[in-house]
Length: 120
Image 1 (tube, rainbow, N blue to C red):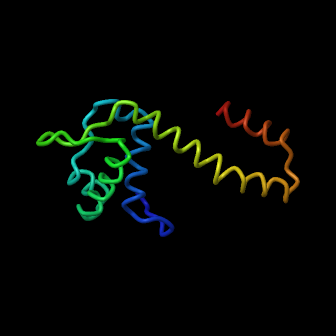
Image 2 (cartoon, rainbow, N blue to C red):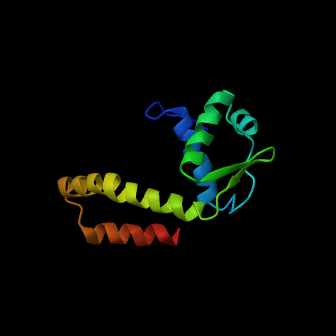
């Protein structure tokens, strides 16, 4: 995984595990890698992985079973998707619309491109 400088690494790690949950790699009540395993997988300090897991625990995406590890909270996938939809609608789309207006891209062209992309 390539980390970017625009966002703290622990948040990028939290996003990565969230991506795995949304993609169905981990389902409700599935065990996720231990903090140590997760940190080693991405070659980061264990403390960085702990911060990522703390964020996800605080957001009720994962939960800890003492002595057993971390597991996906039931409903986490839907919770992540709803949060990401809201973020997309409030942060990404306004800039996309601004760019479209500036470049003279109409909704018809966007719709055509969307339909072509779905076919891929």
